[in-house]
Image (tube, rainbow, N blue to C red; front, side, top):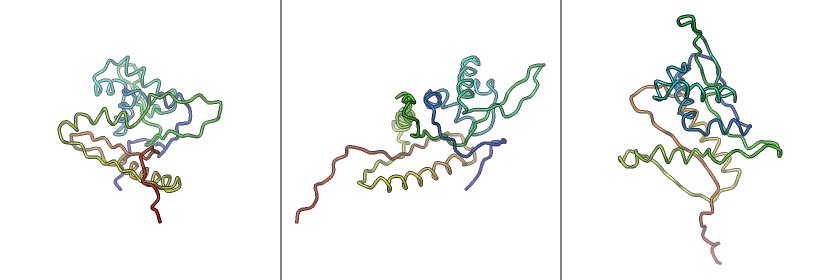
Length: 188
């Protein structure tokens, strides 16, 4: 598997257990910032230029991510007597953990990877450039967990691909329980 190190130390995975962390990644601009930082560490100025937003707006969102442990300052440099900070991710992959104490507030309903993927993929669908599958299978919870583990490995492989080419591709993957109909047991 190709490994594309961002030039600083970071964990492979980080489980988000606090509702504030989940809310932090639920904002589309913050998700974009995190994705940009897969390539390398960047300054607020560089991030603002990449997303075509004011530096003050990007600085606010970087601050939210840093306060919640998703970003860190990985190096600094002096630019005309001002210390410029380079921000990097704290982990290659963030997962939302279901392990919270009963007193924790529930995460807001504004973070759904598939909602984001549906929004992002609309233009690709219209242009005939969307590749996708949806399948349903009646399986045990243990089988679903094992399948999820294997999917997480594929996501890690995708995350580690060297950044190249002109197009940024999205990759959505998941497994979830449904109310999909099933056939009754065969008679006799």
